[in-house]
Length: 253
Image (tube, helix red, strand yellow):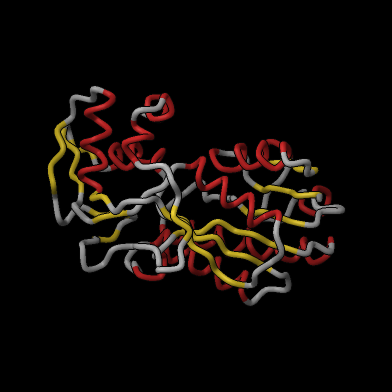
């Protein structure tokens, strides 16, 4: 099966390796390959013969207007190019609970992307994932004021990127579901706890202040508004403590 992944970062690079090992003809491409999804540049060329396209693109700017324009333009061009190339399955990676946090501009943009795919010309599967363990260091850095991290106790159910890839590869190699599926880690944890446990492992000296008004993607979350997976979600095996004990957590930090 010829599979084209647009986006070769954390997930795209791992996914390409996993699918290639399974015998698929796969490429993971980005701007360095002459592709610009916001204009459509290069898409007709790279999608020739593709049976599946996996959209793992991300906006270079998270300003509300910029990120919304990015996902709308990118999805519009990818869907049009996929239709012209005869692609039979369009897969995107989105975020669990995106529709529950309308105050977050990034998540509003992901919902807009989902809507374009759902109403678009191609058979599709939307995979909604919870936050990745690997992004906890970035969350901590974004929430740092001086030497203190202001972290919400609002809980996530985060997942290792390797587990994301495991399930995503199954979706990509399977038939289009014309539906949304969810994946998540095995345990809900407060963002403040995630950061504290990371720092205890890496030796980071910053203090962590539990702050109920600290935001996640620009929105306040609490135990009554958790971006949590539904009952039918696929639950990954790797717990946060297991990941923290691996070399992966040290590289991420």
